Image (cartoon, rainbow, N blue to C red; front, side, top):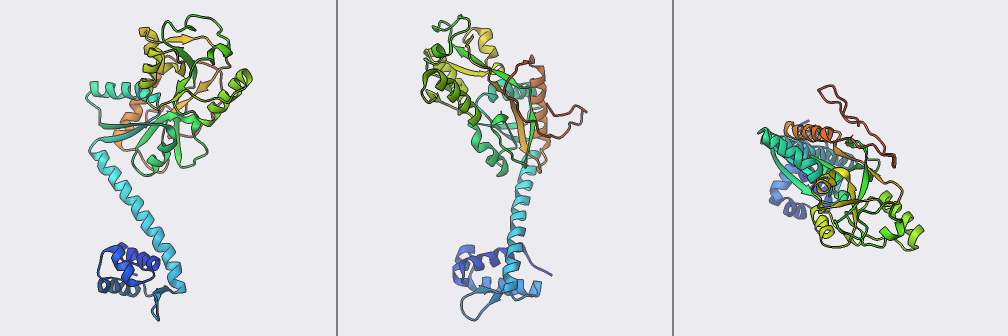
Length: 326
């Protein structure tokens, strides 16, 4: 049996177009060249794939062959993505997706530490909201992403290395009417505009329960924004309030640019993590950055808090012998 991927592409084009003329235009070859390619394919596999008494129609065996041809072409495309990824790795490039809270809290410090050691690869950081990251990962446009993993459903092709859960901390500018008060009633807190990133479904449900019980009105963020520094500017300049994990706000609290609010609401716990494709091996450059992020997370003061339980998923063990399970 002898055939090429180009001949398989020609087969698919003719089958989908229904004629040699239309297919030739689709694959940008002359009709005689396409006819010759189909004949050579049939000779190479020893099968008649098309009936030629009228329009080009697949034979019964041709229809079965088409299914396998499409499968081979899909696998070839996946192989091309893998080769492209390996080429980028050889050049020391890593493409990282980051949820709104992750860049300054976890990723930027790890990259800065690697730059300080002159070990940093070339890094591209895509900051955005979480819904599109998994597809960017599958398409090969990201090596991994760092985000709130409580928003992920059952997606068996994803590996997740989870970090310890962190409680959400409410915050506002210094001098805010609620600043410095103890056990602020929920109805007083909810009277102020709340700004934040796109909420996972279960967090939105949590807010709906709290606000519905207090105000009787559906909950809506006053501002939804994937850029957390922009949200902080809004907090600094007005009477809006927000919430984030403590690792995002620790520097602001230390510098006095934001203050925590003691709100009488049930605890809300988030969990972030690193996510990559289970069947796609991380490049050496990506693995180095993943390990750098893990070291930074380990260096942070652990915060123990009760909150919503989060499913743990298997992640590959690290060569150092320390499990990547969190």
